[in-house]
Length: 89
Image 1 (cartoon, one colour):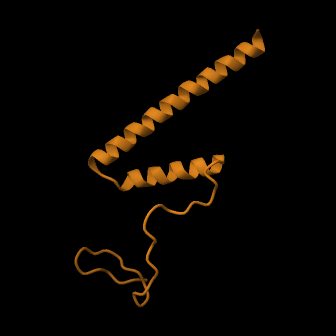
Image 2 (image 1 turned 90 degrees about the horizontal axis):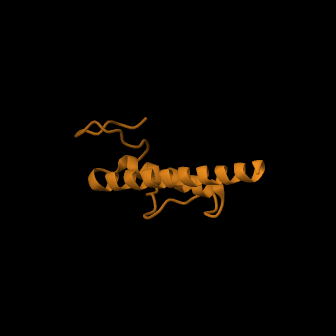
């Protein structure tokens, strides 16, 4: 277990303090961006980024997420209606 930081009570990493820093930029993804798993993985990363952001950036991200979900819902309803019309006509 690591020690407690003196100033704010944050936990520090255990060991002698030498560790590999996280590389800057975007995280590495396991799945291809063109697969369903890749899309879900990227949306999860977007949501994790929103969880740590504040202010306008968080509001804009939440707004974009809601708009995208509404558009996906409308398109799914449209596809379902077209499918039902094709089956029952």
